[in-house]
Image 1 (cartoon, one colour):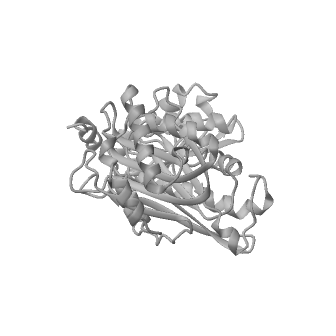
Image 2: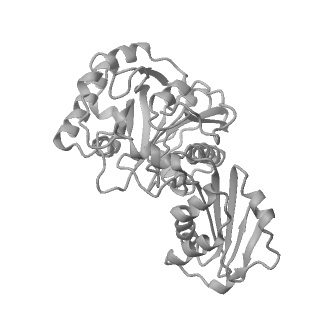
Image 3: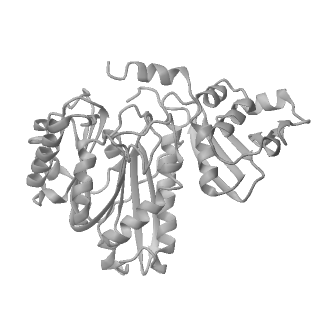
Length: 413
């Protein structure tokens, strides 16, 4: 966790409402860090539905494997998250650690181990000493209270410079329901399902299958449209929990994601995911600029996504932005290498609304001084027009600075 906050951090933190059926507590378990919280326990009421999406990495962490197996039950009573150690690439020891953590948590909460969900973030390859949770989780279960999402978000941070939380309230039937979310992530981010770690809670009465469908659809244009460095983590986990408590106040029980009564809820749910994923981009390791890349005129949306990601993950593009250089040649390079349909002579590029290239050549009205001034802004918008079709997509990234190298050069030190 950095001592200096990213200059791109949100200027304010939202008040996070209490959600009926959710209690939170944090503690210092001494996993790796000193003098800071590093474990979060979220306790849920009986009957809470759970859904999840996870990394597509072929080298997933032990907690990811645990959650995948338990997700089939559709119910959750507790979530345990630790920072400092990812419990990834830890073999049988890692699997034993997850089993022991779940056993300790289940005893503390008073439920089945199959209703315990786990997530770990931090160094890969180091064994996780789960005995450090013994006693700690019991105290947390007793101390857990509604609210305090900000401190919960702080406990799961690693190289993050600020805690990431978001909230939304929306009407479902006759009731007002709340959606609260938190996330952590600043490096090793090119999600292939969600983000490093993110957790969303709601009191809406939504069945597990419907919640799963909403979550799977929701990540596509939010967390899956963000990249910091092109590296997908072994630990990517996004879990959603629905306590159903709002049913007592007139919210209808939802069994299908296609239920028309969910329209406003889905919009609010996706807004929370989008807010959290943007905060991840704003906290990219060493980042000084938030970069939005829009590709339009592609053959398909999928093609536009691949081209946008090619640009967003290019070290040459990202370092040019860090140097406040509108180097459209590097954007052209990234478009060309994406392997998607593109026509050099139809290509147009703009930086922060200023067109720098048109029809395959430098724009005749190009003004170096004007563009250089625009590149000093903390937020940079790159638009690429292909002129081939109606496909359009947008992704978020950040610049690549010397600080990124410094952070990752001594990450384990």
